[in-house]
Length: 108
Length: 117
Image 1 (cartoon, rainbow over the protein chains, first blue to last red):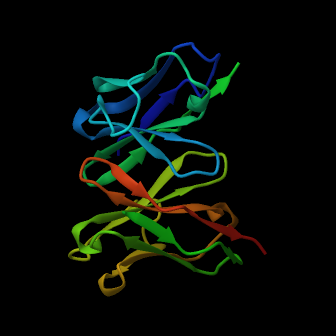
Image 2 (cartoon, rainbow over the protein chains, first blue to last red):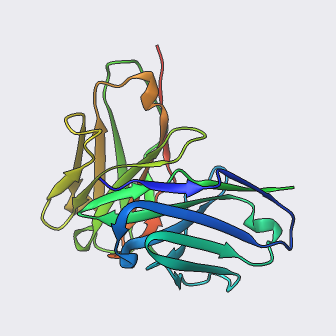
């Protein structure tokens, strides 16, 4: 079973700064099934990026995804106040769903 | 519009079972795979299993195999997740989620299950 490791666990940044979040798979995976979600307290996750780099409908272009193989990145340029949240990567492989441990983006 | 509406919060004693429902509005349930994902407070998301609502096929996480059962009632457009032999570590928010073929496109609002003696 593939393991997704997200880093860092917590990112302390100020509004307007750039956030770079990492998701590393324990073995090479298809980028078609690599997804990023955002979750705010008390809410269900919200789809941000699918296929490693495709923005979901309605997601601002300050969010971007990249990567392939084992290393994937979610970047947020110019953090807005509403972007401070927890971010999860997720993989669908061999009929199984796997989530990373999450990265919390906090206001410095 | 598409909406997943889950049943309300539950409080269970250790050893009991819980059954959470998830009703799909706005689309035919039989067209989709429905996942169940849980989240222990303050922790990550944890996948439990899925059901192909069209043919009833299921797949479960090895961690929950033998304790979780996912079913559906197509006439009621509702999926169900039953977890047995509950322990305190099963206290979590349980989500149903619709699979959009490449990603989860809709989530239920979540159901808090508290296991306490």
